[in-house]
Image 1 (cartoon, rainbow, N blue to C red):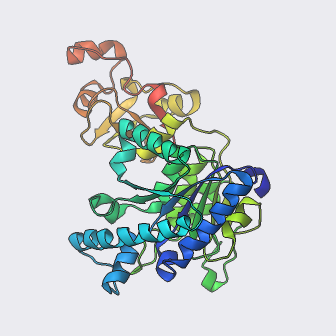
Image 2: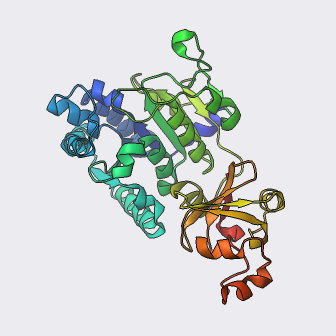
Length: 369
């Protein structure tokens, strides 16, 4: 099965974690670059690297034993480390005559459609020039990314940006386990149903470390990639030849199989690149109409509005059980929806004094999660 998903992969996103780079800040990039350069010649591999490590390397340069807690110090640490990080990647690929391009992103760069498309075009141009993009979160200025973000999610979103065939998450463990490996947990080589098989056994981020991720963030990244039709492998980044072995179908790490219902790029962007600005709670009839019959969301099925949002912003659609089951772009603002909720579409103009559309969220702007 691994060969089925990986042997023909040409566009690959490779993400390497902070701990791996802190352990070997020069040797690890060199090893990855050696593999990518060889696979490029042999099979025309087009690789995009998502590299953590700016904060970890900044800590190393400044002799810090503990990740700073204060935001300005985190930003300063990232600023110091980012230059060192790129030097290491430049030297690693430069040994093969391959240029690299630094791409620093914030969440807004993928959340706003125009900036998302601009980033996509820039990445494609880098590949056309024969360069390897090195993507990282812009930790020096991105307040929310430092506090809440992780590069696993960024790597999954990058798959949509570059139309990747596979996502490889290199970490310091040998994959997902069915229990704590220190207590005898076994590696899970294959995951087909991420919600049922992976999330219940995925742990969180280690406390006091240099990274912000953990196995839970890698499983979430695998789910995001799966909805793009992209297989994900979580594998030990310290193993020699790890990228080659994965792409040749070796039994290494954990393979997360993509879903059969692949989302189009725009719908994937709606579902995962957006942060919902609010939510609408819908009744059971509306939930069934959306989830089972592919209908648009009408005001008659809405029973509550939460948060403040404007027309065009992404919002969550939540059932009576309190669980978000869909996400979409609102065609009315929160105040307007609150006034027309429970009403028929034919009553919108009478209530508001004007009418944009019959739907609160059109099915073309709606994604089931």
